Length: 205
Image 1 (cartoon, one colour):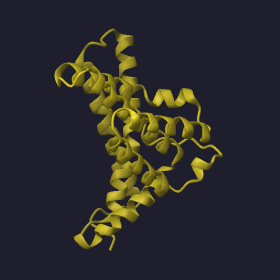
Image 2 (cartoon, rainbow, N blue to C red):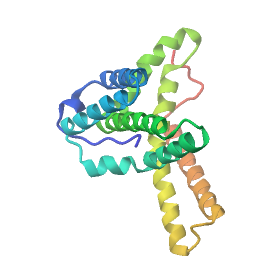
Image 3 (cartoon, rainbow, N blue to C red):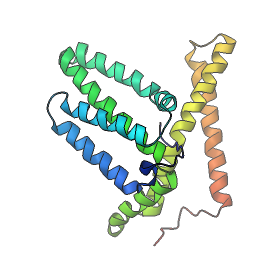
C-alpha cells in the first residue's frame, strides 16, 4: 500500500504532505485515546469520507488492503485465542488498526513520494545538530517506501511462477528466486545512484 500515488483533481490531493501526515498522527492519537469502539468508528467514518472526497476508485483501495486484512485476521486470532483478551476486545483492537490502515492508505495514494521526501527532510533537519544527515535519512525512508510495493509485486510474480510449475508449497521455490530478484534490484539501485554521482561520504553539510 506504500509508495503508490494515484492522481486525482481533489482537495485531498492538494493538501500539503505535512497536513496529511500531521492529521494522520492526530487521528491515531485520538483513536487510541477514545474508549471502546468509538475511536475506530470515528476513524472509519473519516476514512470513508476522505475516500469519497479524494475520488479514489474503491476497487483499487480494496486491493491495497488485501495484505493488511490477512495480518489483521491473524492479529484477531492471536488476541482472541492466545492473549486471552476476549472476542469483543480483540474485535475492537482489530477495528482500530483497520481504520488507521485505511487512513494511511489514503495518505499514500494521495501524496507524491517526492512531497513525502521533502517533508521528512525538513523534519530530520531538526536533528542536524546531533550529526544526522537529513538528506540521507529522507532518501533511505523514501527508498523503503518505494521498495515495499516493488517487493510485494516480486512476491506475486514468484508465486504465479510457482503455481505454473506446481511447486507452490515449496519454501525454497519462493525464497531462492525472490532473493535473486532482491539482489538484482539492489545492484541496479547502486548502479543508478553511482551514475547520478551520489556520494555516500558526503554529509550534506
